[in-house]
Image 1 (cartoon, one colour):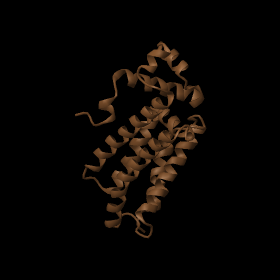
Image 2 (cartoon, one colour; image 1 turned 90 degrees about the horizontal axis):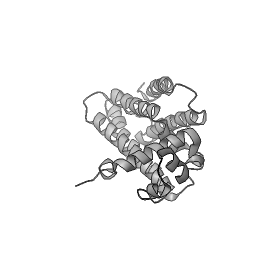
Image 3 (cartoon, one colour; image 1 turned 135 degrees about the horizontal axis):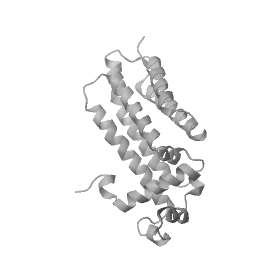
Image 4 (tube, one colour; image 1 turned 180 degrees about the horizontal axis):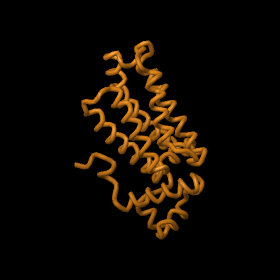
Length: 200
């Protein structure tokens, strides 16, 4: 029984969302039209509509693909027996590496106007956030229990601080048109966040 997004999506649909990603990266959300997508793929517009009913459906598929990639990666990290600090580091360093290789996902999440595009898109972006929070929570709690991370701030508040900082860095990378090395900045950010949340 198929129960994951990557199981359900067809090869052609994957090609379409990858092409949509390339357009997002080069032209932004305003450049992502069915006409431009058909041109990028050397398809007819009607051929695109056979796989997706609208631009909204394509963006949602792109975000669902991202959500599943995060879920798969994070689940593997949580199953390891490494320390909470190592899990925390991997949880974010792997995410940053993924975005570095696939910047169109950053564009999809942080494009101007995208959040107003539709309630369904909003809900899918929130789903991505919820997955990250769900996987970070046991790491923070484990670190607090072992007195590695501070307990003077609640786990929920620590998560908001951490994810907020990472989101701001990603947003700055996006609006600067990817003008700095996200891997280097990301490593610095992870170290700084660990310094802030460690037990003193």
